[in-house]
Image (cartoon, rainbow, N blue to C red; front, side):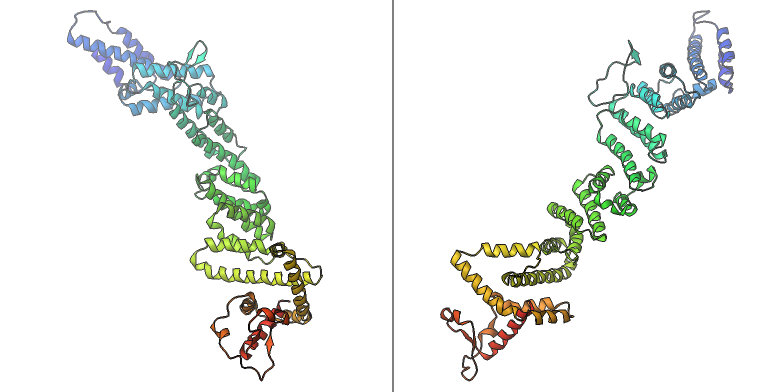
Amino acid sequence: MAIALECIYTCERNDQLSLCYDILECLPERGYGDKTEATTKLHDMVDQLEQILSVSELLEKHGLEKPISFVKNTQSSSEEARKLMVRLTRHTGRKQPPVSESHWRTLLQDMLTMQQNVYTCLDSDACYEIFTESLLCSSRLENIHLAGQMMHCSACSENPPGGIAHKGKPHYRVSYEKSIDLVLAASREYFNSSTNLTDSCMDLARCCLQLITDRPPAIQEELDLIQAVGCLEEFGVKILPLQVRLCPDRISLIKECISQSPTCYKQSTKLLGLAELLRVAGEDPEERRGQVLVLLVEQALRFHDYKAANMHCQELMATGYPKSWDVCSQLGQSEGYQDLGTRQELMAFALTHCPPSSIELLLAASSSLQTEILYQRVNFQIHHEGGENISASPLTSKAVQEDEVGVPGSNSADLLRWTTATTMKVLSNTTTTTKAVLQAVSDGQWWKKSLTYLRPLQGQKCGGACQIGTTANEDLEKQGCHPFYESVISNPFVTESEGRIGERSFENVSLFV
């Protein structure tokens, strides 16, 4: 018996299984002859040989011949046992023509027999996992559906007793967590190997993911990535699916969409949806939306589409996205955008969120814009009181309406209109000359200087310089306010120095006509 066992285990050929069985049949059965410790041990070794030969027979049955010595040497190694099971299932999956479902079920039963008889170091659950994984990776839809019968496909599914089938009903063996891992691994393998959305591997990846019915976040993310590849192709972006997965900064894919389709900034909903599919900015939806809207504003400004740019800027300001200060300032300083009121709001937002290094430049731009608004309001008031019909911005019209509504009482309102009309009549006499002067002005900063001169007329304090001087100007022609106001002003006349200041201020008021 010892010699027979040694001969069988020494042979390294994988085509001697039948001879091994012949030798086994020649050996005496247990109970024959004297029973000693040595004979008992030899009979135990023969029984073990019989189990090993059955495993070799199963391997040969499925086209994976191995020497008897290989099975004996690997029976206590879980790593080698796992490799053998994987090799067996993958070999079956590559057969042409493809094997049937019944063949796969027979293979699973044979794997469990091998595990129970020889490879006890391997867990039975591992056999189910290896079998299911091979079905998922077999590149055949029917095998993927069969794998779904071996798994828990939702968190709330029950775990019935083991077995492949009982009265025609499948029993699930792979745990829910492990099922997710297997599905993700298989789908990613298919996704990474595909060339585009129409590749057959992409359909296999989608089929694997759809096995998990309750769509946990990891599964949904992979499904969204597949959908994102299709959206990228619609925008003209030619890129391998694997490149999409490995892209470290997904916002660059949105930039590429805008580059390939310049007018797609009008499709904000679709681009925002694509950004969500790509998980731009991770799991921060506000940051994701802000980044995309900033790109859309920049593109709209390139096309001078101020309406679209303002729409997105208003949304950015409403959500308080601080990184949008730059695009808001760009739109606020766009001279082609005629809505001065909105531009003023944009500049105010930019000043609130800009870094300290940009405050000075933005303050200068904001001051210039405010002066322009003031000039337009004065110009509008002149023409409006004079009966001329001119076009004015909504901000100017709104400001005038607010001023009129704020007058207390009808008598005061009539008095104000009469006074204003008289004053505007005087100022309008210099309109023609003033327009010629304005056309000749080359200094782009004249708004600021004019605003400085206008301050005394706005009721602001002139400072100590305006209050110093003598009223002894009897030798000079006195200058003062309109006779109508003399009864309410204690000293209606000005000194010589104050008179010069008043003359300069009046000249600057004329410039605004």
